[in-house]
Image (cartoon, rainbow, N blue to C red; front, side, top):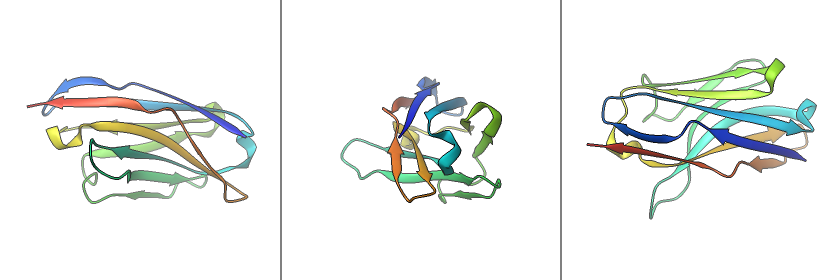
Length: 116
């Protein structure tokens, strides 16, 4: 099992920035991919960005150019730097990991609210 704890959400004005963090514990040696998803009210959960153990990244089109995902394997932590935030970025952001056996684990989520 892997446990995930997110932090860094909050209320920010449009154009502002936030940095989300997610610390993993438990069977961290098994983690292959770490990432961030988000879910806005009334919408399905969607991918924001992912990063592999080797550092390869993939972003949703909505995140490209504004968000940066990074990973500190020594600290078992994944970050999401979000800049130029828009009201449509308002959502609960969830940390997610995929382990070597194909299992997914989710954090409890952190609320990001962008005011116009």
